[in-house]
Image 1: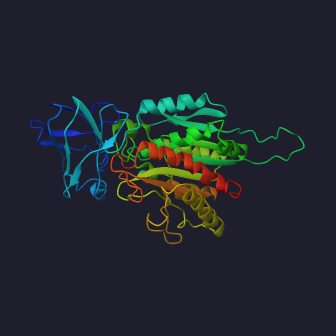
Image 2: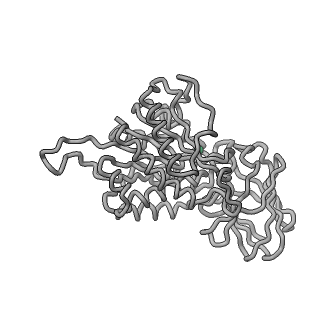
Image 3: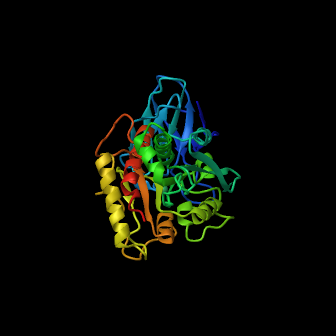
Length: 385
Ligand SMILES: [Zn+2]
């Protein structure tokens, strides 16, 4: 029996793997930090024999609540990731599985590989009205990639028409690299936005320009981290004063935002514990206003009407006035640019209101939510300024 994780986003430590009925594993911490939750490994063993895989020492993991009612994902072909029987006793996750083939992959959620990321960027740049911009290098020297969708030129084609300032819509994903559903969502959103036959996309691109960073944390993604960059920095706590040495990923993104402006910001994440899709806003920001509150309401109503995958009942507790953590991207950007800013969270488990026992929350559903998000964005764009 071979258990291996020496590949893109692989992460597992083998304690013992002699007996298929008693395989004991643990999860390596993100480099220079105490966070650990993301796992991804390959088991090469004997088909049609029951295997009992135990992932130990999870009471001290980043989100112990994340393992309650959680089902791990597995794949034979690395395309289709299905849920497998999983139990949690408070410290050990136990996966009971009888493989049908020689090798099977297990992961915390369907991985989104660095190769797929590069394919996404390369394909997008060939589309009409999409540019690929390089923002800077990560700590490990990977490219931080920005896609600009829409015509940035604000001069009207007809000289009689007034110049109309276009909204700058920013979308970032995977500050927390283990939250791969965030990049799946961006792939779905991009597919629709770049579809020249899609009316919603065409209307959006008349008056808006999209600035999309599909992967804010390429180093953490490749290293198999849950939450941090190569230096152990939680990027979503770096926005008050990003530093080119410790958090270049945030530094370069915020610099570009400052250059072009921000009229709407969506930062895409996954939540380990809550089985819902929801948003978290900027109600705790010092400059939070009636204008922002109305925009939030309009956005949430439109998204609720578009898809039953979204709801606004369950989520994070609201911040008290002026009590927001200004190191978070959503709060920092919302405050600096006085704009509608949301953190959007998807589940690692499932949407409990629309459960799917076979796949749970999945790449397909994340991509669909990305497409639907454009309808909600369209509902607010005429009111952003
Ligand atoms: Zn996150």
